[in-house]
Image (tube, rainbow, N blue to C red):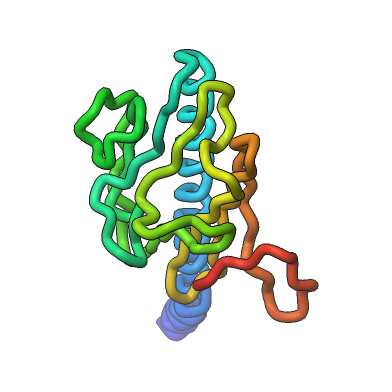
Length: 170
């Protein structure tokens, strides 16, 4: 009986150490998945713009300030300002407390609720555009969309790491 209690105590101690680490891993994986989903949406919008030879927009569904794309987004033809036009695909809101906000770097004017791609798949604007994906307690991600329309995901630097030139504002 004493041996059985000893084994149960050891298992309990092991679980109390493992469960918080597992929850952190789940949050990091969710953040990476959300960044990958956005990257896929950007690439799909670029490809549709090239395919039809006209402007295609990645449009925020809700457009809350500071979390413009967090309430969901869609890919539409033209620049209608909402997800009511010809929608190629809808993307659900980001679950939990994560935020996905457009950043003013490069002169992206307010409201930052739409990213347009021209008929060649490049950005319709005059400078790169940035979106920050943030989740409290986790290292954020910055998605940079360059002028030719290609997205790149930057991870926030960990303590002790060299700081990259592009950092999320989380």
